[in-house]
Length: 329
Length: 303
Image (cartoon, rainbow over all chains, first blue to last red; front, side, top):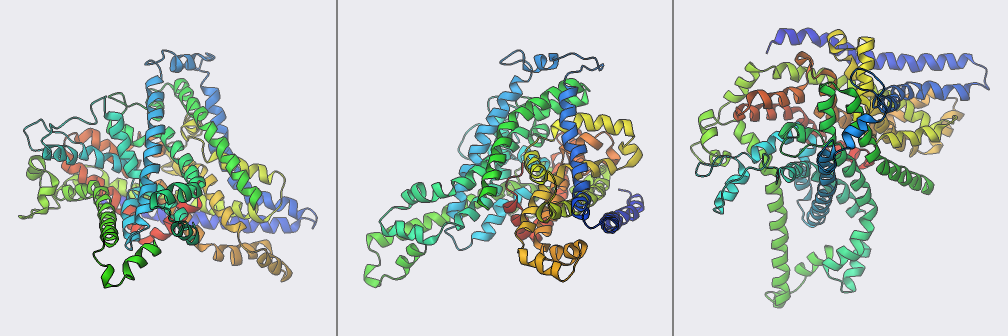
């Protein structure tokens, strides 16, 4: 670790921290000054563009244009020859185990199991922690994995799953627990039968805190009178959960669910670090990254387009949700 | 909940040890056991990593991390020392700051301008643009890599030429939809009177923005800064795609993932490296958790 070399970069960092906001502030002040030079009538129609201009330019350059560019690139091969839809034929041919199908299947696993498990655990923990006085430290401990990178989460779980041959002391927590119950240790991450589940568990561990925080806030929003009234009427706690709490929390559960679905479709870090898609655990994002590094940009782009198509229903749902909220404003 | 606890508290002595009383006490015990049990299970993975990172190599290979929790205690900083000496983790730590700070400052500033316009100015296509931003929240970043890589290559915006600038730009583009969404929701909730009275006083757009809107929005901006900071600090994919090929520009996440490959079974060093990468986010998280949670609650549409 060469400290002097690092310190040489510090001025750059300071310049950026001070310089960038200064440039941006100068832009907005200068823009406003120019707007004031305009006749009164024109000002209100010019001013907004100065304020939203930079944002729209960035979004257009780094999100909108590339998405269309990707769709376009997906029609070319490695030598930049137009090949029509043949990259899609490569990716979507050979059902059920050729092309991208293993990855698509695994993304579906993630979509279903990751989403459901995070929601179930999040809801369960929200209801349970709501009933104890030491709620907030507990919530922050469960929430903590959200603060660290998924690379670190993947490493933490690689370590949890680590395996020694039977008879040797098990240093991985999970196999050690098995040995307490006199079970033979087993491979988790390297066994195609359970590898996907093992990876999903790591993702669930990382994400439950997210669901917990949002669902717990929604739970606190349910009026206490309502629950008391139900209790006075003699409803049991389970009935209250099923008939009162759950329906009232449904909108929040749906919002959290869509976020989880998007994450499940984009799952990458955990898979890349823990297996790199081996042992039947490949997912679309990982497949795409491997194709970029070949580099086979046409096929990479085709996989990315498949991913976008998969996200579109969620996107439309989000927009509807947003419009419904706007209409209620 | 309140009812249940009152029932436990109010009954006089004669009701003690009645079947209902025992049932209530029992379910309370069960509840506490469940909550504490779940929490323990949840912290075991992190605890295991933390304890392991301080264990000497000979112990690490021969026994589980939990054995280190009982005497004789043998903890050491050797793993940290070794991994920092033998890898470019230290350099990456610095790179992470070099990437994260500008990639937080730039989008938050630009988003504040845009959010102000979206909330308090009228312009052609405003609602359409905002709806488009909400839609873009869900778009997978994977769909942007190929064209941007090609474009950067053509323009010479590679790490060798311009260092981290390419990453700052893409992170700004990627972060803006969420940042604008979060801030606009907050700005719009500010009372209209505020703007009307400022206008009557003859305050210009700049004065309203810098003197009224920004100071009132400190909590929202703080949430956004923490959110964006952690998001970039923990980002792996974007850094891998844009600077992954040049180790001298790699942030912590990329270097850490590379160590998994190169150290192989050198697990005890990996645990130290992993924990090293978590220090900054954990400090940020535990000291500013309130703001982080608020950001999550405000932006739960984000993908």
